[in-house]
Image (cartoon, rainbow over all chains, first blue to last red; front, side):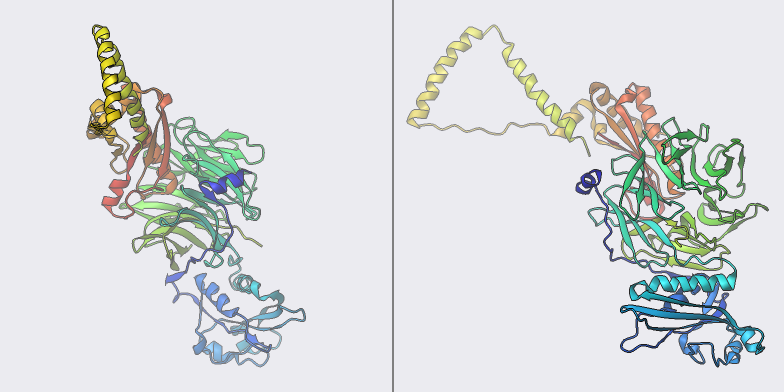
Length: 437
Length: 183
């Protein structure tokens, strides 16, 4: 009933496909990546060829910043299985690995059987029968509408085989889109990590902020001003069910799910200035974490769930601190730069990703937690809201590009950079989902 | 601007005052009753034979804003207080505005003021929510020091989420660092 009421007032929750789509434009880092050949999959059926899989895999691998897929017109041949491959042709071009496959109609109507193979060119070129060049080989049977997700699955296998790290191609991003011409200008949207399949999950006349994914990828916590004040909600993405978490006077902000998915770290200013609290999402029990007379905000959990890092003005300008939850022991962890904000620890626990201000510019930076060394990753301006891919390979963040607020990507080593401009309006506050499979 | 509601209540109050003034003239009570008799007869006649017709003109009334200005000076119509970069101190040029609103709130104890705090886009959205609240709080503290009851004041910070200038330059940033007073 609450939902029905909301529908008629300032909020619309819906799942219709929105027309706008984000497009990733790579600006830097392709040349230093590893050459790879992703050969178009051979269509073995009759009639028109279903949508391409290799194209999606190729784009995924390129956007990872690790690989540079060679263009199809430069390929010496376009084989579709590993028998009788002349590896020397590929080896001479410097290609390290070959991705190939075949698509044919399955026995069951409407489905297709896809085989894929990943070959190591160096091993193949040695021509030693006791060493197989095949690194991975799989078969899948799916409907055509699932081809995009299947292609991302193939990309995950290829990426993991060649880098030793799990791929993050089957993930999504949540973000806030602002279209001031719309009756509901503030929209919480979700798309695949590559911008496809964009959907609005909440539209409002008032601002929406700070989306945070639950660790199971099923729910989003966010801040909504729909009642002309800040409130924290949790929305189930599969059922539309929304639940109000906090509605205290003044700030209700910055929710972040705990790694076990039971609690939300958040910011409330009901007791004076903004302070960090932890809310049990089931019992709604609230406990205060920080006690300080200045601003404490932007809590983020360490991967082990035992500490929070947060931004605080206790030392003057905002810097990033860490508090151990059982002991309450607090330490400052950033020292360089005019101010440091918006910190998140990488999934491996080794680095801190943050927004660092140097000479008045706000840039995404990464600090090695052991050495304390701080490196600036971006060349963009007014960077904010960094969110790390679940495999720790890439950071999505919000920035101003050609006078408009949009999203951008940068790899953890800073070599790969891409812009994701908004087609209309502005986009901000990106949040990268956890692994969804 | 959200002063419409205030002004409406004043529009009701003013004619009431005028009525009170008319009825308090006791010396001429008897005479006026006599005169009234004659007037009633005359009115009935003229309507009957239709030789004269009367009409009315609209009274020259003050606008809602003028009524407020009369009572609280022009400053009452100003509802925006701007701030320096990373600052939440009230600059002296805004004290007239805040004094006018303080007087209005003290005269009208049933009114509630919402102070919206805003920040420019520099820094993170979460930090800007905190900065916006600090600005709103700064305005609230000023009003309370003048004598406004804290129960008449509500704070909400929109941080960088509701800019008035959508540009990304220094001028836009200066315009967006503000507190807005809404009733």
